[in-house]
Image (cartoon, rainbow, N blue to C red; front, side):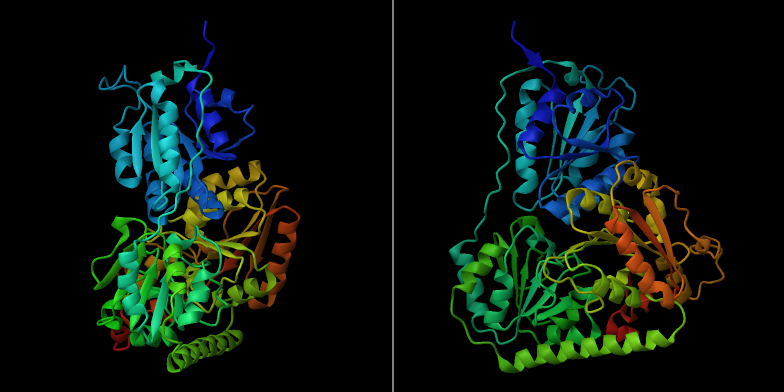
Length: 566
């Protein structure tokens, strides 16, 4: 008689061979996975909410640059993950989602929690597959892991029919861990782009989130060699050292007003690993009317066709290394002076604004960011939401990611609660300090999994900006003079304080005035070093917003030239 074991044993065995150390999720009520875990040495972080579980897995994947794994049940358990998958796809987070499915023997019979799960997830993942026979199980795992990390990273999905999970799998299986492949651009495409780059006098480089899987300083060296201004998309922050003399901030919506001139005067824009979503290209139709664009991406679908220029298919680091070895013009002195002057104005504007805030009552987010910048270690991992006031950290130079720090933000989908939940995954993944800057709306949405952090003793620092609810919506109502409407987006009752469960592992702090801000944040760091989960509640003023988003129109602020007329 041939010895055998069961599908979860094979799945856990493969994941172990692939170097997976943690699983996130909420398994099916058959709990068959539980018996396969003890001998693996892997930890299962049991979550309270499947959406949060995918967010956590995304935070883990983006921190480690490795595939993470999420396990859920079927039907509504799977549908609860869809927001997380939407975020993971747009973030390029390599996640393997394993979900139970209705058995093939019951399909179409209105079986309990039966749903067409493949159709639900297929638009949101790189690959979706339902395993109908145990002989295809390991093959499916290997293919899914390979696709998750190669090309443009992203989520993949494997469905495990219930009747499959009782079938024996032959022993002696050979597991092949996923291999990360390189994708070098063609010489023809590199030459075509170089013909533009080598004659450019005012180059600009935009670094996107697709460059986060690389290492080294080749981008900074290339920028220095050619005198190129360096910008990042919101998701690309942390790829280059923001203390570099040529770094000028975040593109599009988050570009400081003093730095817009650099975009207007550039004569070529090189984008590396960016899908050029709307936030990154805000005002480009005005700023880059006649500027050629060179796009470098590993995925054909990531190229934007709204701009004239050259498309280079391949890894951005490989392209930059090729161009770096070629001789072009020396950096243009006038252009370097323009960059220096614009940066000086941005920093001066920031300094003046901080001085003004010192005279104003209450505590303001830019003041908090300055304290975090000076009091917390440089190698911190900062997770952000995209709310009215946590958005301050997107605006360079109010916060700068120095070499060794890591930024994790929501994608252009900006799913509420992503940063709060992803922070747990990030903290599980690293020994570096993890700080989450979130609004009270996002924190309260996440709170079903606050107990997950307590139960698994996951230390991190939450800085919760409490403006009494959903500040972005209230800000729009105020701007449009709709204050007579009976829609309580914010309320004074909500500002009385968020409810933090009292546990020995949890430290609750509050900042109500600027006088206590530094002391309380220093205390937060001290308690974090004692392996505590720290929640710092900051009483935020609804009017504390960056000047670029003070004039709003729907999802986006008005263009600068439109806002100036109001």
